Amino acid sequence: MNENKLVDLSKRFAVDVVNLCMEVKEKRKGNVLLNQLLRSGTSIGANIHEANYAASKADFINKFQIALKECYESDYWLGLFNETKMITEDEYADMYDKCSKIRILLISSITTAKKKTRGKEDD
Image (cartoon, rainbow, N blue to C red):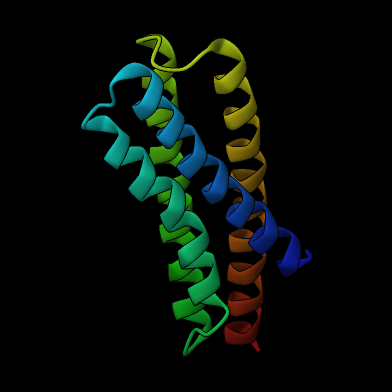
């Protein structure tokens, strides 16, 4: 898997989350929930970035697992925003698609890293 693709997708997602939250705050008077999406949506890329400087393979996997958890949390907040009409169906569909792509890449990366780690232990 191309690590740069995951870094690029997660950073773009973070930018989109920030922009979406700013738009919601301006147009819809904002909400305390915006902070939740801002935190989880920007944490994905931060943890992926941090994984590139991991001290060990276990640390790398842990950072990616944290990023995956944040991805699932972002998905939750986006769904809640959609169901409460804080964002439009189109906004939700676009952000859900981006979040899903990141989630798929993270799961694949974690699975691959774990297999490589187990393979070394079996030797």
